[in-house]
View (cartoon, each protein chain N blue to C red):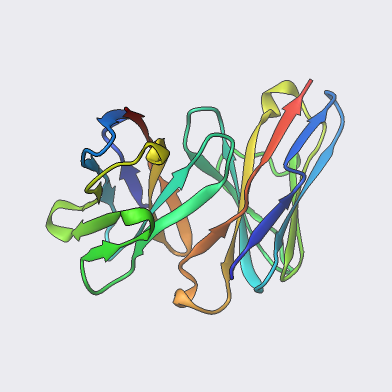
Length: 118
Length: 111
């Protein structure tokens, strides 16, 4: 149980275009979803927290107009990188927090999406 | 705010030898703690977690970790390392339903 999927696993886009990444909780309802970014050989940095039906909360230094997050349902959150530039190339990982079990303290991670902007 | 320090950037260990990865955290209240493993290009796999209770926690793949409040530590151990344990290991501390990750420790296993 507690499986999170991400789509696509890899995407290459041209500079100036937008790309959407989906994060789905497959067998549970996710009260909250989180989006992380990971540069090569580095740790995960939290970008934003999204709750179903409300606006995402962005961490300091993350451009909310560039990284659009939509949490339309209890099983789906999307991250759209708008007007992508090569410096946006990174590994993006989502996680989901269940509304029940372990007091909601555990996050279940997706497999990640490798974004390359050319 | 919480923070995590993993003092060792890279550890090399011989197959069959024991492994210990260090993790120190900073948090004002009782933390909840995790260890994750990541293979290249992959997502995170949870090895073990501590919320409360017994301070020695058993995880998957033969790993265990011990929570020591007095030392603000949550070190990960494995008695005998296998070649497949070569990966990146992250310690994380949770608070207010958010996780903060350490910088990670790369483990290399030599034959």
